[in-house]
Length: 270
Image (cartoon, rainbow, N blue to C red; front, top):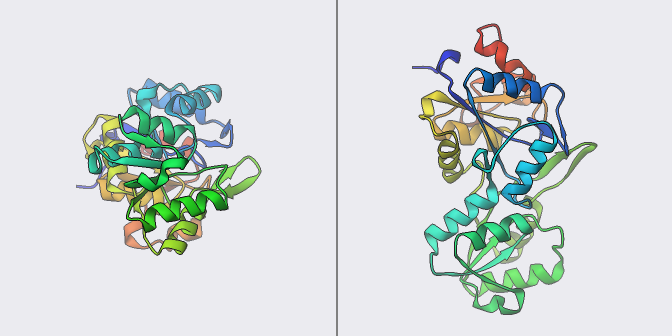
């Protein structure tokens, strides 16, 4: 049975391009999310952001006028750390990334190596690193050539900012993949693990939930795999033309101009 607006008890929102651009909420979004919550609808956030800690993402959302707690936020760094612990509970981890990834790995009790001991690495976990350079590229490649597994947060090519786009995590990972010939295990959106953690964050059955995002390959593919109603908003990375031409695996159940059209859709007028 197809999900109807009346069935929705929770939305899992992407952040960049969906509810925000850079450090600013998109116009009307704080008021819209407040209106959804006033209806008793759960609102949580799942982002492929991996540089910021969960607390920093919460601070960013709150600073934009979007109330959120740590229970409302899942990042791709958290997902990567969870998967790494499941697959390598006693493994030695070489992490390439910023505070969000480092904290997530440490908080799961994993053994974190510094770069001077990278030769001991049994798994490389990689996110977006603003200090990534040729030295780090060589160290990571050497670890993988020595047999380390390769886990990454996501393969996003770019992220929206207040003035356009900047390169995201994917380009750095592509460099490692090109050099080593080893494809990584991708744990963030649109992976099955991301879908599972989205459902955990919402705390509801899939048929009562919906994912809202601006990217076909990340948000919509994940939502469809997780059994969530999938809503594409045209406020970020995807055009209406691209949405109309999307393959079945990434075809949204609903396309809206932006998040602010959700209440009208819930009321049957969207």
